[in-house]
Image 1 (cartoon, rainbow, N blue to C red):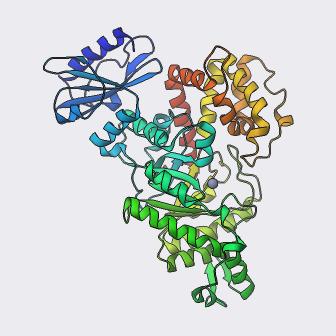
Image 2 (image 1 turned 90 degrees about the horizontal axis):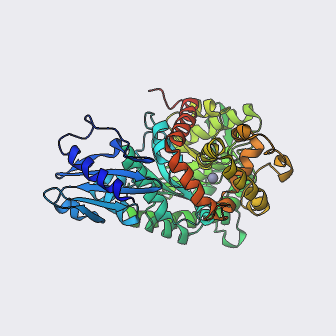
Image 3 (image 1 turned 45 degrees about the vertical axis):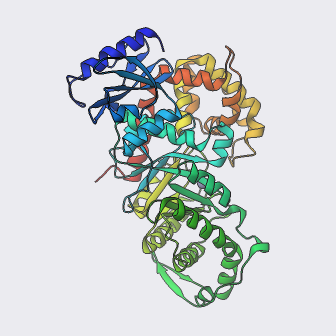
Length: 499
Ligand code: ZN
């Protein structure tokens, strides 16, 4: 950080002493590409705390003395009656924020509100996501990252939580948020993510679904469901012996994992201190409503209270683009799935939920407040939209890297796009590059190649990841604005904006 910047922070701190947070303050500009965030300013125990930025470098500033100030790491840059301390962005600084302001730490979601999850692969999307979603009915999950994304971005889950803490503090968002360790397939992954701060654990059953070698005997309670029938959303579901056997063959082997994960969560967070989601969305076939019902019945019998269940819906929920498939069939089945969730008192989980504008209204209609929607890579695509508009050379370098890495990236994701679908599409004048972010094939191509892009060297030295961070720091307002508009559209479509 430049010394001129530090000087300005010191005089700003003196100026704030005569005012109150939320009151009238001077300009947020502190020089070329340097600023402070009035929305972050808090006063606690006689000290002032706020965030500022000098280029890509972000810092936490504390003015005043006392036990609270002592808890914040950093360097004393002004002494006297009201000393000023500056801490660069770090895990210690984020931990200090969580200790001083508990609303910057993740926690369990309120049970009776819909919820909305956002992924942030670059760690700088939270402010824009909050602006788009904070005025809706949805409770928010901000630090949401799958093990796959952690591997591909080379980040730890603790870093993901830190990024959310920082963003939440920057925006002064005090409503609380969840932290989702997404798509966890083993008890070890559950343990690791709980240790790293997750409050929302999403179990991916794919390793144990249908696993013949660990199929337990069908419990009598399941056997006794034979011949039962249920009226759900105007459809009649009936459990005949074949259906029950089929259900048990597929789901029977999953209950030991779910029970173990639930016990780990309870141990780490206490009863009511966590959210547990069971997801089967990344399976080959649509989840049969009867199987969902039997799964819910068996979980309830075992005393496992889930926050949500995410079935695989009919049709295609591909990443970053709209729904592909038969909307009437989807609506019929969503109605049943939603009613099951409603009866058992949990939420219907919708994964790969970004950009499904054509079907948001039907999810809103049937899910109502019992809906948990997840989005992930769409915030990354909004970042690339900013780069396309502000630094065509960087965007072209990203595109080249994506082309090179696409075959490897495809192994991780199910998408309909092939390399041939995007070849030549970037051969357009610079001014047209942002339009590529409105093209389904290009969106998917850029959506899944982030791991390849982030680790690649940049033409001007450093990595593409560094270049991206620098670009987004310079265009912070533009990125936040893009995200705000993008997530408003999601909330509007899902009916989350109305009271
Ligand atoms: Zn999923």
